[in-house]
Length: 205
Image (cartoon, rainbow, N blue to C red; front, side, top):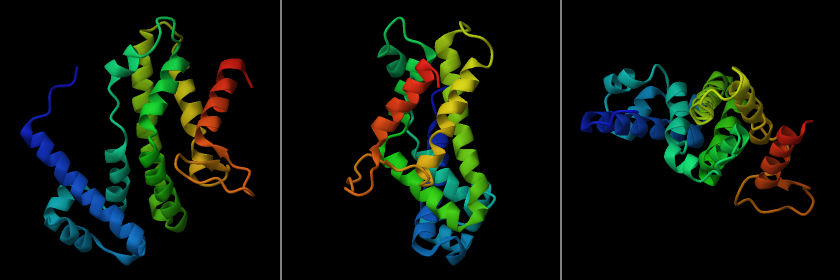
């Protein structure tokens, strides 16, 4: 069980988030080439030294904004909503519905779009997905209590999180929640995509 965060922890978290948010907003407004760390600290109201305590570069700060906005799912709430005979796949489906909120998906797509223009951000996309995937694996391992073979939860999480990348970079025509349907587009909804992906996982490819 994680210890309760102290006031000092909360203050540090708020500082990191303020710096990351400023970096993200500047990246959207001016592109990654259009601002420097000094602009970030000025917008956030901190010193350059404070920035250096949290981040090694502006790219890392932009990426951290997305991790700060990832839904912090309550595992007790997640497990409580599942039936007694639920499988790790059921647990992963519930986790994704909590984690990939409409707002988070839109921000993530903005991040992927930025990275396509500025290759210096690309390694940080992989880092964001890796951290989300590891968090999912840890949740699934707690849920399964060793009832499944080693590597099973890793395989599940890897397959599911890998399937999100082509949505976010535009290679698959999937509408995010809240997007309007274009009659000519032939796009499917995010929920349809999610359900079809899990049908493949449940029934075989």
